[in-house]
Image (cartoon, rainbow, N blue to C red; front, top):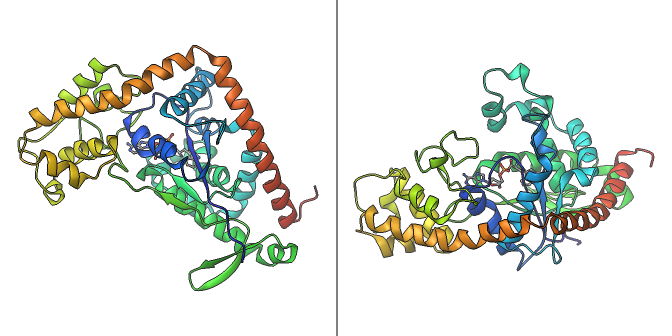
Length: 354
Ligand code: TYM
């Protein structure tokens, strides 16, 4: 029985500064996965158009995310790093998926509801169809694993729904042409073309929360810069932000159960654990009983140790945009070769002339 080859795909939008949430929820995992998997990492510039069509400096933002990937340790030679708009098949497959997916599925997406707000009629059609483009990003490479933060979980479930519906709508064609891979879906053994992708959301900080409010996600769009640590922040700024991070008056607990109901404490412990690849249980074993006045300086030191080399290297790389552009061009070519094969198969399966 043939099987899908394990392949990792993930993407980051070139909108605004990258922050600690992006780093711990996504980029740090991208780096680790390179050891065990073939990986494709994409700066998803077409996604950036869904919220607003006019941008100040999309090229500069795209370079900046690429610089962050490289500075964090992604190897663009052993793996693939590129920007989405270089490979037109993303948009092409997204169109097919727009015709596979149902409007009801899109309407249920919490991120769409949040971003569209009360004035849904005025949101772009692209914002509604966003998850369909995201599914296309992943399935264009028939990727099996997708490292993301917890906020993308629902989009990945939808990606599986789209893959499953495509596989079942075209099951006869897929079998007839011999393009299928056998896979177990529930109790059934089916012959599918697209894998049912697995999200990789584990780790101690799948959702890094705001430093000002432990019940809200750390986000690029928060009006308060004190709510997040940006990858470009210097040591003094990181130190100030952690010092001013909201906490409660109690000491740290000695076991993880003691973090329940203490959103801010839980968040800071999770950040510490993720930054040094330990579990939250290990961190509270070390710091249990200590006050935040002792824990915060330790967290600051760790955060500066991990983040400063990355921001320094980002600055260095951004002085040489020719190198960054060459990385994206090379990655784009290698991604196109895979994308081309998939689109040829998909057209064949659907019955489009090509
Ligand atoms: P984006 O650009 O908003 O965020 C990039 C990655 O960072 C993660 N993330 C977080 N993780 C933990 N805590 C947080 N506070 C936090 N904030 C952001 C996100 O989960 C994400 O992994 N739709 C995606 C981009 C995308 C994509 C894809 C991802 C487009 N196509 C295909 C995977 C596969 C997004 O807007 O991420």
